[in-house]
Amino acid sequence: MNDTTRESLARLFRATETAHRAATGGDDPDWPLWYAERLRGPLSDALGVTFTKSEIVRCLLTMYDEREVRADLRAWPEFAAERFVECFAESESAADDRLALYYSQGCAYCHRVLAAIERLDLDVELRDIFAEPADRHDLVAARGRGTVPVLRITTPDGSDRWMPESRDIVRYLERLKEKSRA
Image (cartoon, rainbow, N blue to C red; front, top):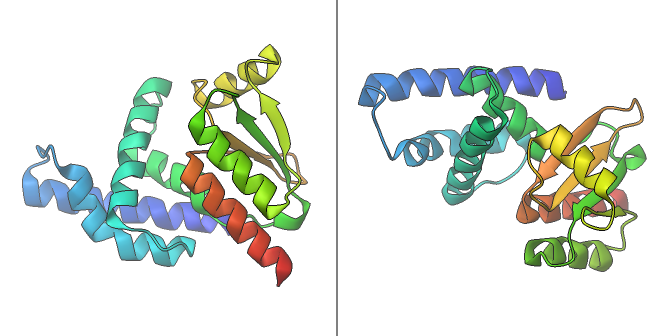
């Protein structure tokens, strides 16, 4: 599902980028607002997550900065599709996935996720990036920066997804718990 979803989202982002250039000439400082207006429904449908326009704007701006920090040379539509799948797509093996939270003690956003883990009574390995330098190294190697919190989702086949942003992580964990009850 994730490959199909990724390809579908890449097509959606390419079409949106083309329409944006046609409508604005490409010079638009408010481009995230324009994209959010047009992407809200299609992204929600493709990923099974209800997005607000402000959440999409936040995601787009975060991804834009992350792409620059990582010096990722992929085209924007492919990068954005990959990141939306990584951050929001359902796991195909959720019941068997291993979860690890990369966090730091002094991070208020990390405490939001830690409280959710406790409230939901989930089995999540905790990796304090300042207590264990190897964990920080792994995080920076995978994400290009040491910003926390980040949830690492490791599937049974050994592939990893790295999910940043406390609200997105909490939403994912809540959906995971809800599915395990069903």
